[in-house]
Image (cartoon, rainbow, N blue to C red):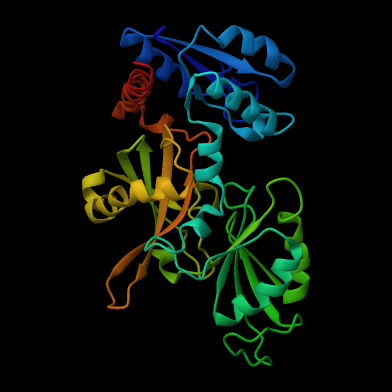
Length: 350
């Protein structure tokens, strides 16, 4: 082993600070160096792919990706292919691109819909024809949430409910496309009113294109009590964020941009949720492809009730492509990341 880790970043983007890096990049570098290893930052560009490949191969034992795909000029595909090729040559990926896709894609909810973590009436539409056929029936069972695969900060996440008093809604029977629906987008909780067919045509853009899909999930009213996010380093919970949507009858978004209020707790404060999640982690990993657990990632949950009226936690999504933690460097997260990265490399290469 060279005891050398490369950290990939991308130039530009709103996640960079005055020195050109993400605020949380150099703390990771410094934490790794303090443990007797070496870390170095390399900026990825598509046109530099071959040069970077030659530079890092044989010099570094593993890589940590701190690239927000939205900052890459040509999208993430070439970058992920680049990371995949390094992993195939024996470098330890943190995280492997296929793990980032497996955990990060919204349809992971469908892959877990036969588990206690996700309602079994959760669907994914990969073709417009599937969406056209199934969603008018799905909506007949009650309020739904549609999630585009490519969105962030609540963009393209819609709470959809029928408000048409002239339509007799029969669960399991297809709703007319003329049915009036109320649609609230999580990005800012703004409300729009449409005919169902008109709104579905608008949503087709979420399906068309690379990695296009829509996930259709039951709306959980208890989201107004807050979303619960567990920040993880590998398989270790670091802290829990309770994200309570802004006050308002239509508010359901848990993003800061939409006015949600955040509270940061210790994992022990949510012991039932954290224990349940950790107990299910081996099963989750297996169902999502069997890759190593991401290095830095989050799991978001919402409250529901079980058949006995007790609290039940429902998984909403994972985030793992480039999770930030700059507001909590004082918790020593960078040291935990360094420890986990060194452990992974040592375990796999020794």
